[in-house]
Length: 109
Image (cartoon, rainbow, N blue to C red; front, side):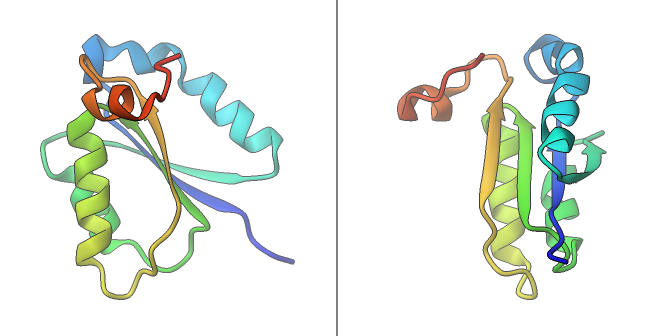
């Protein structure tokens, strides 16, 4: 059986902590589609980068929720992890400004 495991990294204080109101909904939606979700809240700058840099080849996707800095750390961590193939990254913009999401037309809702 093919595994469907998602690494979900989120910044709980991004955008005045508004992601906290949506966490259960996000996890519920992913789980209802058959995904096993492993959650990692960041606690300090560099956490998302470290988590991705240290993760093993056991995930089908990486999803992150936060601002531009969280997304940057996830992408940077992936580039630094030579053992991890490039995985699709899902992005839930929940920062204050979300310049990256705005530029690409990704809605914040």
